[in-house]
Image 1: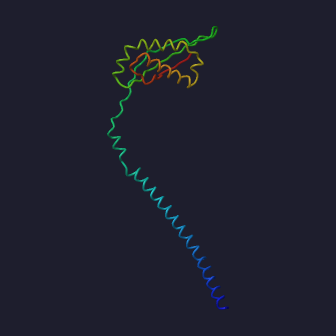
Image 2 (image 1 turned 90 degrees about the vertical axis):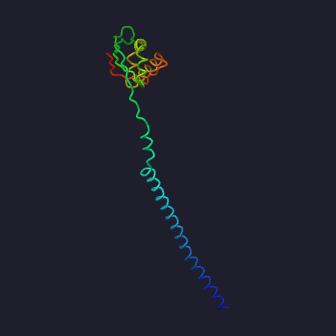
Image 3 (image 1 turned 180 degrees about the vertical axis):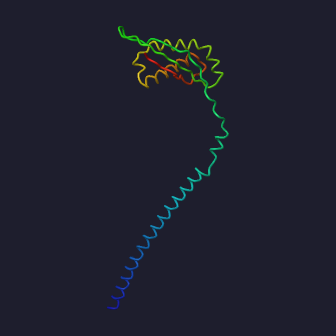
Length: 172
């Protein structure tokens, strides 16, 4: 009976030792697998990045085939000097405006030139209604540019003006 107990204890000790030895081996295998998986992801990501940014030149071929964009054409608007709207008894202030119209190409210019008196009239009537406070700051000039562009497009329809650009804006 004593021998049975000793063999049982020896077997239990061996089993415990095996379990203790197996546990670190299992953890080591997991760590190794995680490290290898991370390494594969990093190398795969680096390889894919190199392929798209260094070795892939399909984008250059598309840019070479595209036609270069035509530069826009500019149409001068006659200089405009108007008195700004003010309350009775206030000092009269004037606005001097030099502007150009930006269009896509030369045929549009030929369509706009006959309508230039109408464009000048629209500019003058709109600018006379403005107050000095309407023109203050860059936001005021941006609103003025947008409003003039909208009005010019209505005057020269069906032709289209891309933008009204200011050469000079003086409030005095």
